[in-house]
Length: 154
Length: 154
DNA sequence: AGAATAAGTAGCGATTCGCAACTTCTTTCA
DNA sequence: TGAAAGAAGTTGCGAATCGCTACTTATTCT
Image (cartoon, rainbow over all chains, first blue to last red; front, side):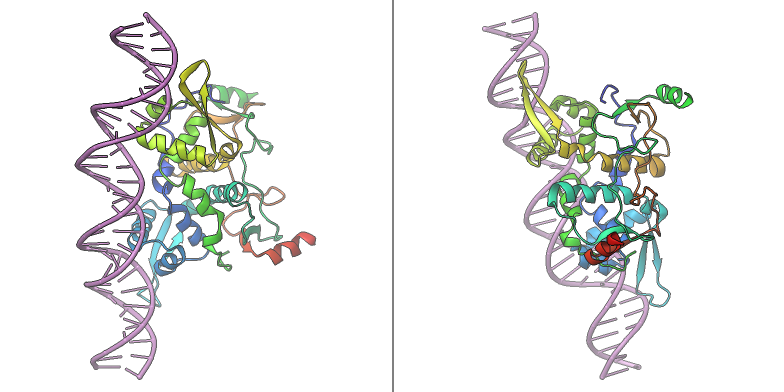
C-alpha cells in the first residue's frame, strides 16, 4: 500500500468528483432514488435553493445521469429520472451513508435498504477480493499493468 | 422502491457530505491512502491551493479522519495519517473511482487496487444482499423498523 | 551565520452559493 | 371564459468560498 505513486491527474476519481463533488449532488441523487422526480418535490424536501437545484439538474441531464421528460397528462410538469449511469452511483451513495451511520450519527437511520426478495437488510458496502473476502487496511496494494496480468495467468 | 419517503433531514448522508462533499476531500483522502503524508507532498501532487489544503487537513483532523503528528527526527515536518474512521471511507472512494472508470473515462486507469495475498484485482464495489447477491435496480426497497424485524425473525 | 525547507497564514480578485422576487406556461376553478 | 393557482425555472444581489501569490515562522543544512 502506497509503494506505487499513482498518477493522480489521469485517474477517474477527479472525473467522478467533478459531477458529484459538492454538497448537493448525492442528496439529489438519493431523493431521486427515493421516488422524488419533480423540481418542486426536490426543492421542498431538500431545502435547496431553486437556482442551485436547476443548475444541478441541468448538469445531471447534460452528463447523462438523469433523463428529463415532460409529462403528457400535465404539461406543466417535468419528470427527472435516473439513468443506468445515474443508478450506478448507488454503491457510492450507500457506502457514504453507511459510513455516516457508523462514524458520525451512530444510529442505523431508518428507513433502511432491504432486498426486495427476502426483505433482509443489505450488507455493508465493502472492498472485496475476487473470491469475496472483505479487504481491510493491510490487505491492499497498488499494482501496475504487468503485475496484474502476470497474476491473473497463474 | 420509493414507496417510503425517507426523512431526508435525519439521515446520515448529509453528515457524511458535510465532511466529504467538496471537490478535494476524496482526492486528499486517496493521496493519503496512496502514501502521501506531508503538506508539501499533497499540495504539489494535487495542485490544490495551500490555504484550502490547510483548511481541509484541519477539518479532517478535527473530525477524526486524520491524525496530525510532528516528526521527532525533523521537527519542521508534520505527518498526516488516516485513522480507522478515515480508512473506513475507502469503499466510498473506490466506488466513486470505479464509477468514473466505467462511465466517464472508460479506461481501467492504472495502477489498480489488488488483494495483497494473491495479487488479484478487487471486485466491483456493489450493494449486496445478506447472502452475497449483487442487487440491482429493481431488487431494492426501503423498509421501516417493523418490517425488518419481522422478516429477520422468519 | 546564511540559505533552504516545511508548514502554514494573509490579502485579494473571481467564482459559487443561497435567498427572495419575478417570469412563463399550463391547468383548474368559479 | 376569465382569474387564480401550480410547476419549472430565471434573475439580481449580498455573502461565503475558492484559488493564486506572497509573506511568516520555525527548523535544519552547509
